Image (cartoon, rainbow, N blue to C red):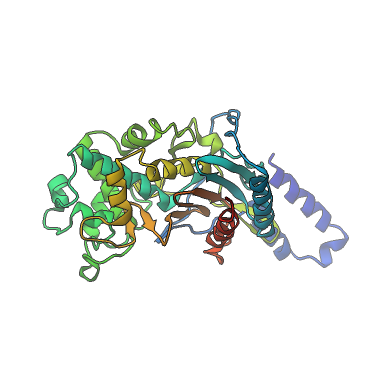
Length: 391
């Protein structure tokens, strides 16, 4: 018998006594609903999804790996203490990773891993949502280097079913295809069918060659990656990024060995923690079905910025201009004034990473107030202002 069933029976016995005349059956129903929890509709930056059924993992959780070595001086320690106070004051629930000049000064967890109240660990993994587009963009760039993809080539050259669509690979990378927005369906599974639905939905001429953020672009890029390599999208991400960068806390939603590390999105309403159950992640290859720790997100961002993935000239090209198009968004990341930015929000989990020449800041949260969509971005700004004073 579950704890919730026992609790409900105790409540029923109690209210069957002297309180019966005061508390109605309607009150019991409300309590029952609150105890059972509810799901809220998630968003992958711009995509609206439907809730799905939960599934229990059968994998026994392994021990967390030792935390990364922290190298701090007294000023760093003071800054870290101040950051923790700021985050606690904002009821932040998640993990934070900070590196200064390639030395880790903070890698900590605050709060709960799930709605059951298990404590978070620094190496817990979060659904990164749209931040995954950065990984997809990096793989595309790797394949460009190998001559397998030309960003100025028509999409139909790689996927003949898109014959008649005036869309280039670069259009997809820049969110300028004009594809209609993609929404998850319970009627099918997998990347192939998802791409076919995107093709059937077609293009809005008003947004062709105009920036319009859309998951469909990077889902289709995942299929292009598979087509030119004859390997799955997952295999390509593992080959080009996860393995060479030793990202041990990065994996896909269906990686059973890593699932024990997955944080669970949840909300807190009416005194209860209610979990948010992901649905349809099989339809988001390329755009939102990877889990990562804040540490791994920071390490990936740092590797890119420090030219460990591409030559200095290539990295500079990606950071400053792509051919004739200097729009801030390209290859899955945003160019801001003085720093680069990644951000993803999906199923009440959010990952944000800011990185520049000196600092790498990554935060991941699994307890979000939907009414405060920019709250963690504001938290990160406060963190950046604190570490920015460090010499």
